Length: 281
View (cartoon, rainbow, N blue to C red):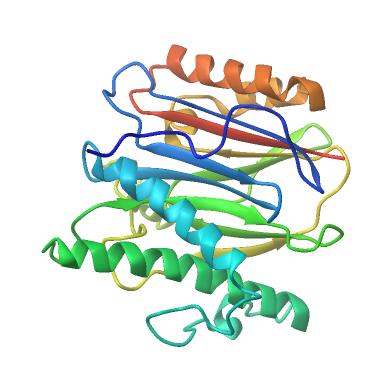
């Protein structure tokens, strides 16, 4: 029997970029926690995953995705290509149509794309071994950032509807786009008979092919980055989240996480709630 545990403790973590703090809560309705988060100071890697597939399966999926991702990145220097399912499928031209990435950033993005693909392929093959059809079986969202160079930018990766926000100069912006049928319908201009907000267009695990959203983000002192599962953002007003983050200094990130989780519960969240904050030096 799988026993869920958080991959990182809820305590201040010191990264090259700043101070990070994460917290996850089962919420008011669920009987298990299918969320998880990882803060790896050595790698400069911070990520959140929201698993799906029912009791235990979702818990396994979120944990396995985070561990697979960090394992791949950790072994980059040890293996020319640790992918066990073939060469990279990363299309840099499609990911950066305006050609804004430097050659060095493109190399890093290729490695990050392959790390996400590695995590997906591990889970997909496990689903196949358990005789799940394509599109079925356990799965998870995965959103986070990696800073391999302490003086360099953040490399953002995103699959699903977990989110990355940034508070800069008092303004909170959502940096990722929800990969859901609801968001797609809104972008098409549909306003009636909208699909459910939790119907994902893609997730790690159910399909052999994924297309993660990738970004390069430059940071500034005083920035606060927030990763969260939909248990938070689906039940909490944007301005209310911004108010809490605006008041959060480097020493108050744990309190801010607690306030955000309490606010989601008060807002009627029926899901697990996870939030990770990073305050930049």
